[in-house]
Image 1 (cartoon, rainbow, N blue to C red):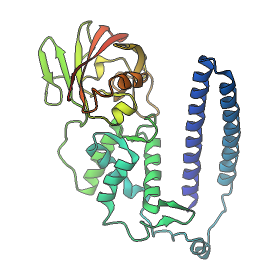
Image 2 (image 1 turned 90 degrees about the horizontal axis):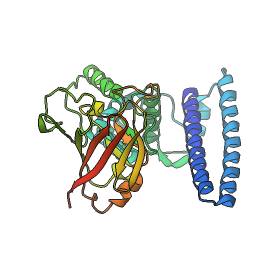
Image 3 (image 1 turned 180 degrees about the vertical axis):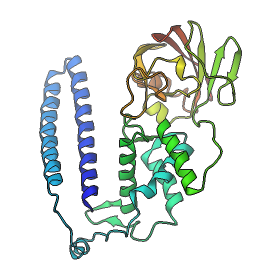
Image 4 (image 1 turned 30 degrees about the vertical axis):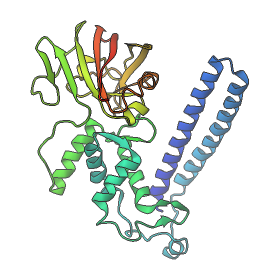
Length: 333
């Protein structure tokens, strides 16, 4: 493992610890709101311990970066069971396969699904060494670990979303542009395809049409009474993480990036927002974001049986950029 790999590993570890702390804070707040004060205090104590641990890891990361003259002898690498430099695929060799796999999977998928497709693309380039487990972690395969690091680097570059649900890999618009660039360099450029994912069907003064087939100009800001229909795919990550796909065609129908709005549903109002873009995207950007996310899991749970095989929802504007109505209008049972 080189110095850059260690720095990346530290960054990944700190990010994972932060995710655990955020989850504990959320659990503790819920317990407190329910009057479960003893449990809330236990959660708070555990969060403090993990915060202290994170600070120690951050100190170690700083200490490592200060060791500018650290070197690794080849004999030491071999005795530790590590590969010599050049004996494993580089991080960059996974960029194109990962981005391609995400597009082929509809723009977002679990890490296992993405890596399954990546493996099919990379298997002829992988050696027997790449498919061996890591000496210090037999549960991890070398090439999969490298792919995870590549995903982390691309997330920092804004090519993969940094605010997707945990375990979900998701390409951004910047990532799609990078994919086209890499394909041209690689000699595998293809004609531009329409965005993949659940289909959006719009209702307006021009009637009803399928947005995935339409060549019309994308929707502008909505008026009260305007609506869109969105197809929900069979049970999977959309239901599990409470997501509603927003294609670029209907993006302006909803408020700007991470601007809260209310969805009136049959189980009560939900405050939510459009999310999923690069980390540096400013709040309120009118075109950024690919999913409505936040507060929708209870609604999906209430309609779990109906949406096992997918369906269609209608979202109608009640008050532009402030309040909308959500209605399940068709199931694929």
